[in-house]
Length: 388
Ligand code: PMP
Image (cartoon, rainbow, N blue to C red; front, side, top):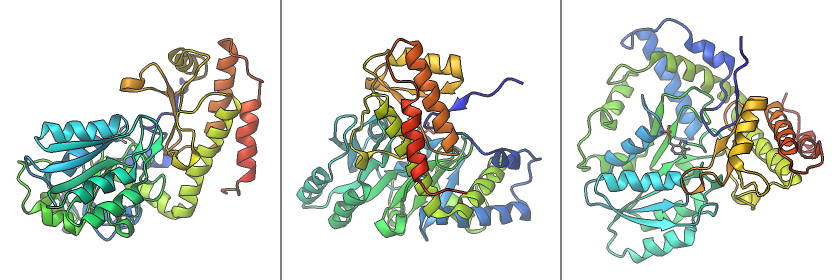
């Protein structure tokens, strides 16, 4: 059997064998008591992951489907919304909002820079008649590896008093804290192929009571993505339409695993992977797009290689070593590479990736001291408490 490629991209991520095996069984009826028991456990664990007492609803969709559901269930045509744009996924929010005829105002920051909470404050304070209906933004911007200061921005949204917060936590949930209730988030969307350590196929939308209140007057047509229907059925531990039951088995297994690990270990593990990766890349003198560690996403690190063609580096890594890393997107296409370190990734995966990167750099004629990246990463791991 051919060895599978090693996925070091920001989703789909590596998936534990136990999670894959959990899904490898005959499907069950979604109208059976066995399914209802499964759904009850999953729902309780999803609430744990979101740190919330609110509803967390499951869709058979990718993350973008969950984003669309997060808009059409709570807003109406012509509503005024602020959209944070500092990368591809902030731009995607703006596209979704534009497509549905919302009146969007973009709050921008250059790619690689974080959104400025003060600019949100300024816009929200200036809205004296409280016409802004929602602030829509991305927590971990996967296209650049920036972690936006969600908590600070939410503070200003709450001070406004009217606007809902609609948040893409697609590459932050399960990777770093997203305490929905403590921060007072209204709508939180995520997807299975990221921090959940699962294959692609499920989208999630967590909804606050304020957002449910907005749902009652929201005017967009909706059918498959009607979260009210999902909520009604979720109360009885079922779903309005046929769910991908085998993915639900996988979700049950992955959430059990995450819960057993607990937040402290889960998040410190992700931090450790990010820090070791960044230490190695710095030692290799590969320029980081996000230079400030305080705003670096624990999900993905972007590099702008200045001595070698990024696409050549990426293709050589895959061809010679079977390590798959991601390319730049949109305006960064051909300019950067991205290493994903979320999901079921361990220290060994980082060390392997860095070793392959070093070897490829040398092969492509980029001078670098053999072993210098590995040394930096392993020094970092050696300092961390053992995760066993
Ligand atoms: N938001 C973010 C932050 C993402 O990283 C992604 C996927 N890379 C999406 C949204 C879209 O998710 P999907 O491709 O599952 O539709």
